[in-house]
Length: 401
Image (cartoon, rainbow, N blue to C red):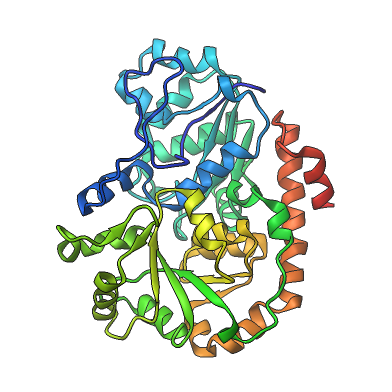
């Protein structure tokens, strides 16, 4: 399959060109650094982890890039009121529809437009990375369109890839036949770097750390994370939690877009006040680009944090990485790939030196690599059997062996 439509997650902060001319592409964000502009740009990608999911999906396959595209198919459906002509654009111009997904199985999320697209699709559909937000008792908590979308995918998709064994097990318990735990496609990008990770051998003071989490007002998790990194050289990466500080940041000069860096003099007092303790981070970042994200991580040594895709960017660069979690989605992905992980509470109780000795030891890294090779091999096999060629097929097979 050479002409692919990637129909769900964005890979970068770019505007869509609504008239849609051949050879056109959406424009990048402006250089404005106002709070309102950053907020508006955020809604081009939503959760920043989506950029890594979308980018990974687009880069790991071998296909005709001049005749393929990224397209929010539900937006196309709504813009053209679900017309046959609009849906024929998909059926006539592409060999497959690839749907990189994330937390799609959760209450209060309506997939009516996507379901209507799927009902008119005649080309193969490949679903990757679908997952649950949290544990649920049964299907009754989901919107009816979400349940019908799941049934359509289960019956008709060529690949029904979910992100881990929790999601696969729950769906099968609900009567679905074909969900397969394949992990998140973002974890299939730069496998050579991931498999090249080595355990740190020094003390915490020898390293520069990078972390991500939930620095929010009155946040217990944020306060725990800050305490964990007390006395260390550590950078903090914001995702959507930066927008909880609208009143404090509106109208202020607080962001250097060229460096993707927030001004220390503005942010540090806000964070210290928010968590009720001194924030120990000496640099703060916020990314609208996955390339900038990875470049920044490249001059750090270790990632330990409370955001799974913040950790994925670190793994892609080859940093020793450990994930702290408090919810199912992070726990599921960490367990599935064998990434060293534990609860935020336990990490904070241990302290950073004991944590590193246990969770970033040679044995833990070796165990992670063993699991990762299995997941890499399984992903490669399922997707090639479905007709999708990998960009580094032979090399990938050797790495996964």
